Length: 502
Image (cartoon, rainbow, N blue to C red; front, side, top):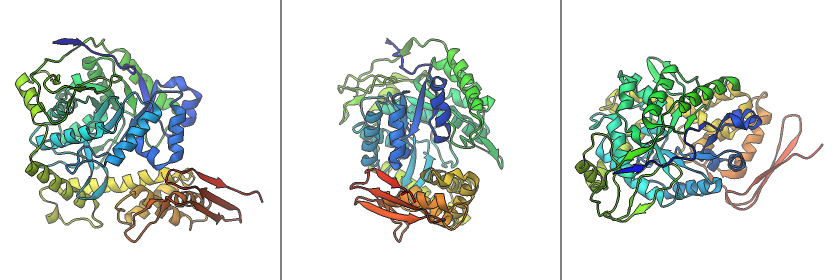
């Protein structure tokens, strides 16, 4: 049955990830972009970042982008995180929300970074269960699922990359946030043609696109979000919009920010590609004999329409070209994995989490059946990511960008990962080390005071926890100046910084 394809209010729009380094340029020329994206966890960690997100929602549509929900975890998701994400979406009147098809924790360990899933039916089922749970905490807006970059390959993948994501969208009813930078990275690192890999994806189910730059280091392409978008990624973007029609396109830039004119040129290139897209008039969705699941199925939708529960037996199953109706019915009827499947996936994820976060490098014999080089590379990425996550919590110290980054790298290398609130624990360590450096001390002491106002710790195992009780403390800076931090009751209470006049 042919049905009209709903158009997104963001169709053909071009946006950028909102970062403090870009704020002044964006606010001085708000017409440069059509929408912005904010990292949800940054808003959770920093009340100031959340207030900023609420303020910019009066200027542009704001899309919350989650990175820590762990939709691929076999052990399920943290529903408190999902509820906080839902509250943020409502606060920002978000038109859409996105998260990753990945896991960030396993066996009770926080990995600290997005880790791609094995390409198996068991993993797709885990994502479907977690998406169904997350939807109960999210508002009635589309949840888009982003494909992940792979730094660690699982042996024995049962599906190709594109077919795995076709399984995910069919089981969840969610459309894709297609990161073509990740597709390019995976193709280059696997030695396959990027265009062919992209063509294996269910492009008819793409609802938004990410683009970003990267760099080759030691023969491996890293999607860094800190380099210009390469021409092959723009070529993949053109391939997507030629197939899928007008889509929202977002440029991600998280580090090594160039003059804004350089980013504006990349935005203009993306806009030209968006304007070249053919109109998107129809979607093919055959009506199937529906399943009888324990919960209502979710009808697939497009941005701006929300996922609406359908009555059992009357659902529309999303399909891709070449996927027979009998196969689509099978996908909907296989929502749950068996206990043994879920247990096996949980065991694999716990093993990966241990390999990636253990304080010492695992010996080669302990890595099998994973590739030793893959594990070493992934561990190095996680160390770098810890610094990237911690420095935004130290805004004053981060003004000394290179010195703070070098100091941060030394601190995280010498410290095991905290079991919870890792970025906060690392930021406190970095601030403590910087307080002993005469050049960095004034900024580091203030940043540390503000963190202490909001968090308690670190404890013996290195963990920190939100501070629920009131806080009042002063610090004396080099030169004799005194600053006070005051916070009321509750973990989300505002922290006031007071600097008495001398």
